[in-house]
Image (cartoon, rainbow, N blue to C red; front, side, top):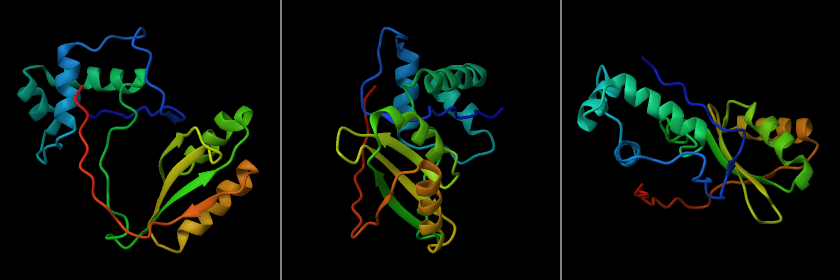
Length: 169
């Protein structure tokens, strides 16, 4: 079995409305467990399910539900694009509030976009672009600008900081 991530069209900083769905103790243990890494083995979902004392089918059902309800906005690996010879940048746009959903959909159509967030700032849409080759970053940003009708600010990193972050569910 394979879980298919179901990402929302835009990731928002606002908290999820808990009245829509209440996390139970298994959901919380699952979220906490997935933040600590994913096993590299033939049946990783079954391995995690066994640790949590649930079935693989239940784990996959819960994972899909957590993605659909927005408790999880993304599930999958993170690759260090630059170490693999690719390009990586943070980008931002100033988009009229009435166009945020449309522009977000445009941004998300690009497979090079890892995720995007709406922010309470003049530059209100922020997203990360990772490409196979460094020179492809500018082409992706130019395409997004052309398709959306809004300029894109390229904000490549100057230095890298590693911050291990774990949210207790």
